[in-house]
Image 1 (tube, rainbow, N blue to C red):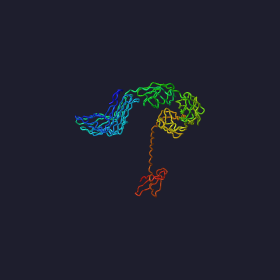
Image 2: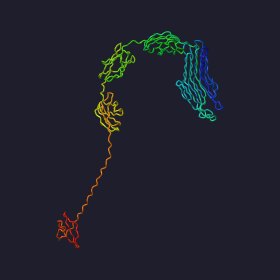
Image 3: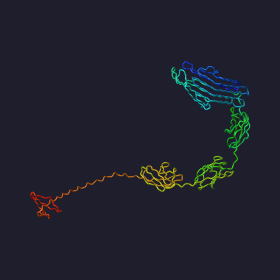
Image 4: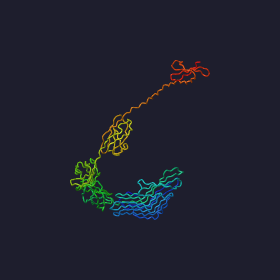
Length: 553
């Protein structure tokens, strides 16, 4: 739609309200055939109260809406322009509202003395029933699909890819495209087999184009007011010349200036960026080209007395050595010293990052408040307070329990002493270290940990905290000899208890018989006769009892 600029002939502008290029032939049946549009070339105006009437008969599609198109073209100072306004647009096919829009407006202006410009605006756009913000469509487009009724197809789906609105311009032309939709069809046609995707065509709405009748001249630079400033930047400068346009940029020494304001095509103002002391070249650039260079001289700003506003951190250990950042103004590299209390830190030990930031290492100082100030060749700042905190004493171990354990480890060891810190105490045992969850700090005087396996012998243990390192204590790994299985003690078999001879139950001695020592053992025996006439001897034993009787007759 847009021709290469001729840069001479009147009429180099055009506008297109609606352009439809759609076709579909399934088998031998033409289901969709549209190649129509509403467009004009410069100069001219066209009002279309009914787009459907203007586009004529559209096989397989319908269009409704209104449009207004205008283009201008003239020689020399008149320039060229084009514009389109489409309202209440509706494009349908296969029983689906493919494109609906409340308004699509586009314009392009190529006027003398200014750079070409183009813009487009779309409102209330709906594609296949889905609202679309054309300004937010990604570069690759937005895909939308909806079911469609297509004769001879099943599971038909109309697929739209909405392209983003565009507005581009260069030194000689400008073009804009309000709304572009590419359409395809997917589905299955039993008579011709499965169909993956069929390209239908494109709908273009609100396309405009213009071209400069004369190529604008490159800008020129003639004067800088003032032509010098401080190296920190921030100076307001006026540049006078010719050919300046609204999109003019300014650079100083290759760095883009801030706050460019184009007062006219012959004058603009800008704010200088920071630069290096010395000369720098200033140029202005428009779509037509870049100006010649003018010289601007940067100078170091006049020195100012230093000021101190803030310290980070504002407290430190009394042992010193911690890095302190000082924020303020008026700091000079190589010429700034810092005083803390009575200690002066020389410029060699002060790191000046910039005029407002420096870094020093705090010197040692007793606990309490120490005033801090900064001195440069211009003067000395006021003071801010640096708070010194008494340094904590290093930890001490006074006892270890137990002092020894088996080689396989897993023994819980308790250390007692002073200066133990929760979450900041590390126990070192030989090559092993225990910290965090491996150390249980019960209090500042007691902690415990579980030893690991080791070889036999003593191992040194010490504690480390932010305050320092403790003394050492010793834990000894010992090898325990295996305990032999006990030899069972034989149970002695008691000697059999001799069964005593039964004591004979003495047989009563019959009365009436005298005793006599018949056995000759000194004991009186008795003879007696039983009732049955038998004669029995009752011998008395040494215990005074009677032995078993013996029949003797």
